Image (tube, rainbow, N blue to C red; front, top):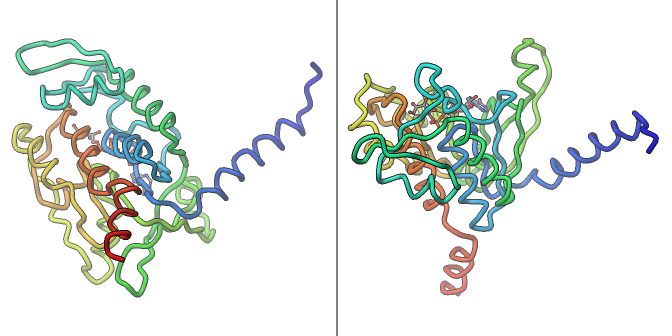
Length: 262
Ligand code: 48F
């Protein structure tokens, strides 16, 4: 087979453009491809939603790759082991209730799970603002290439519409902070010191719709609520992503509710 560079270029451009044009109006825009965002994306896409993970970095995975202090291992407690099993992530019990897994395998399999469920990934893309319409709901996100932000280039962004935005940007709670800066539409209390037990339970209960159309998940949920941080235990991140997908629900249930109202 004789290879031609122009055809390769055309394949990349048309391939990505088709996906982007097909994903300008989303059910769910997950901001941040860390463990909570990936879990949410995989489960929401599995429920039949049109989902994109928007990740500012080159690689998906957020803070999970590095495990604890660059030892590529994560700890997951009993309650979240079923999520490891669901994605085929191998684990071994270290002490009663404490399971250890490879952080690299966990990122790879969560990412594969989200892709297999139909989620798309817009990496190297930064969310820099939100759109709020007359009904007071977050209706979309303002996005730009991360390279534009890094290069401090004066280039206008583009937009993507969504029914649900999920702030899974970790400790920085970027989307929530954007709303805070818009005349205090939301208060971000900021995370507290490390306390694994409190933080791991808190992160699930703090995963909620904090503003119409905006759900916070993972460390962003704890940052908004003023909850503690937890370090390299990741069960809460997985459970938080699952909770976010549950809050979004399934398209079938939405159609069912509409039918009943008529
Ligand atoms: O930080 P991150 O892994 O979020 P998480 O799902 O998990 C937290 C844990 O990794 C760890 C912990 C648990 O034990 O405390 O820190 O809450 O992933 C957040 C992702 O969001 C991306 C960022 O690059 C990272 O991959 N991100 C941040 N800001 C933006 C963004 C933005 N403006 N636009 C797009 N992506």
